[in-house]
Image (tube, one colour):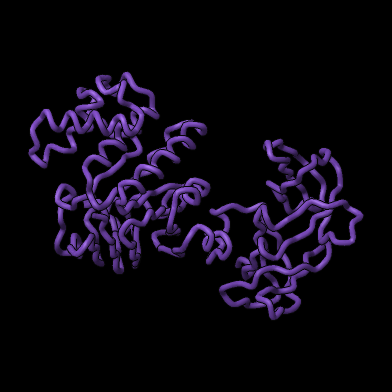
Length: 361
């Protein structure tokens, strides 16, 4: 049975006054796959460790299911929280075979050893490792070790699975294959899952809900689509994929949720209205790769011009890096056809991918 999670006004301060988490509140419905996203030092690992019971909270409350597991006074230890965890470094017992590593998760149920081993073998088959059950961790590749760790988490059949950047040690191709496997297996188990990563693409591919942390604060939660199309802060916009940033001056507000802005050089265009109020005419447009289109320099529908500095073939087409008057560089500008390095091109801005924020102090 999947467990809901409620986190209320959570704070964690380490000795010396280092405040890792501040006033974090979050509700996770049963069976939800939540991804916590943020840069190093944002507090996502600390939040996961508090949820697991590895760290004691300084203030606030954590409830798993109907049970308060931490409230600043009480602290339920990890082995009594009915959860399982997949670690970044796999955390397998080196002296146990893959089968026995997985079976170890059933020991607390006091099942017969033969049943534990047979169920472990069955779970290893589900993750594609049935033929490797007798191998030891040092005889397995990184991806195989990660699947053993995932099998161990799943066989425990807890209501909550925690994943601490489990794919960060794998190469790009294996990361993608393991991402698909993790998504399929944990959803099949119907457990509530909390997964942390600093990889935006991984977060969006896996998550039902995304929570973005910045300097110990939870600054935005929502579906991947909500986070991408309506970022709440500059950090959220930057961390979830930008082609670049362009200083502009605000000209007028439209009735359609857009604002007319004017760059230092080029034509006025519309951008999404900001969530926070503008304090003056100076503003900053944060441009998604989907918010800029390549066009000819002489085209009447261009807003900006720039020089192509680099081109990368991406299979489905070409991504361009474009320098705008030596002051702004846009990257990841997609086109079906390849522009030549050094060529002057036009750029057309799409309001749906141009997010307006107040100018930075």
